Image 1: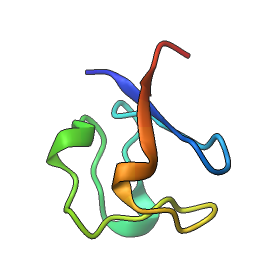
Image 2: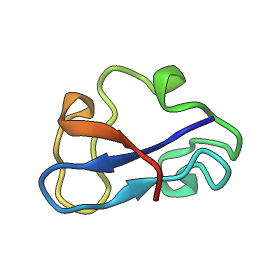
Image 3: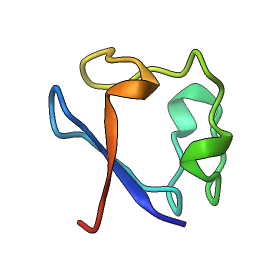
Image 4: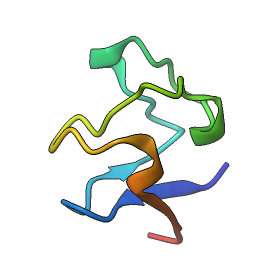
Length: 54
């Protein structure tokens, strides 16, 4: 599973960690996140993220 970085604030979604604050369990692929999921730092929509190696 790949990591994705927010273009607005550079938050990195790491699927190994998930996003427990939003009820997203670890090992949840970015593409499996709900369409209405938002960046937990700046609130940017899911389409504001790009795949990253970092």
